[in-house]
Length: 351
Ligand SMILES: NC(=O)c1ccc[n+]([C@@H]2O[C@H](COP(=O)([O-])OP(=O)(O)OC[C@H]3O[C@@H](n4cnc5c(N)ncnc54)[C@H](O)[C@@H]3O)[C@@H](O)[C@H]2O)c1
Image (cartoon, rainbow, N blue to C red; front, side, top):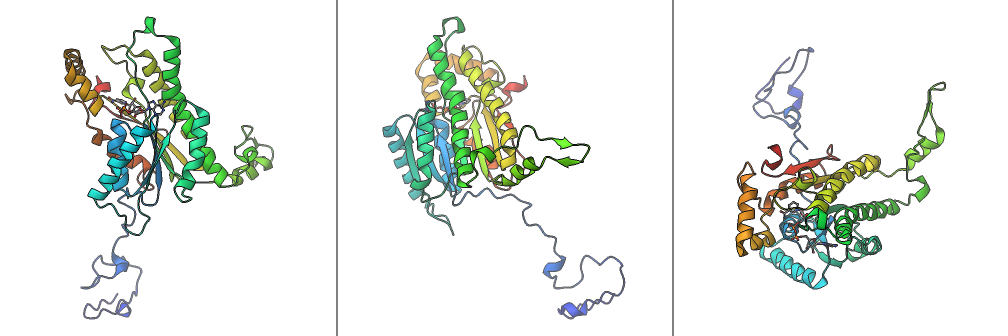
């Protein structure tokens, strides 16, 4: 091998043998000899995406929405009360202005608001069918489902109607949103309903060493969103442990259901390249919980009891869930993550 370090010409590198090349070949390194580092460090930008955020007027959602806007995503906010939603939209629009959020090389972010009770599947389907046109034809690829609530009622006194409604909101509402959005995506790809599933009778004929023909055709007909369609559900550590001292059987049941729903959907819809994950928070200090704690002696005692059980010794701030959300929504950080339940609880469930 001849190395002529006085010349920058590629021709001066004349390889005469198969011996390994020296790492530094020239005083002026060329692109060829630098390692390719593209895509090693993930990108968490969400420019040109529309993210549906249910429970969009809520305490956790507010911080998550700010983070989504900063990453360039437009928002479709869903909640029970249109007036509250308008107020939230105004606040977030001011946030956009204050922070001068004008994504480069992409459309300006936009916020739409949608009044909907997530426990009503008709309402869910109706608003999901309208979001795309409100966002100039952009189908919402990302979902952050935070809608939910908790009742603290002793199990023996729990009115069945109340318990059923809670489970309908927290658990069934999650399923309705996942279904409505997935059907929207599949319809957008013009896949007829009867060809949307890999037949359960997927079978290999061992004598012919062949896969059933029809199954192959159906498999080829499937769309593949390559993990870019990503749904994040907010579960709770209450889906894994029983909180104390407050009784909340229906809430705990509903959140356990959300965690297992996520795993089931992740398995069913992996074939479409749709990823579904869950974040399970411990106690969060939102405006609402802060108010409860500060306004009564009972609230203060409750907080003391809770924090005594948290290894990190404090409640979480909403912003401590932003990293997990962006990881799970990202197009290239979490491509191999689906069906996961990320427990972010200051260590509560370790003891
Ligand atoms: N705050 C906590 O300590 C904590 C802990 C673990 C999990 N979580 C979960 O995090 C999520 C957000 O909680 P948060 O603390 O922000 O509470 P929050 O009450 O501030 O927000 C929840 C939002 O969901 C909306 N909502 C309730 N029922 C609805 C329905 N039927 N249809 C549409 N929207 C509905 C509410 O109006 C509210 O705006 C919830 O799912 C909650 O269970 C909260």
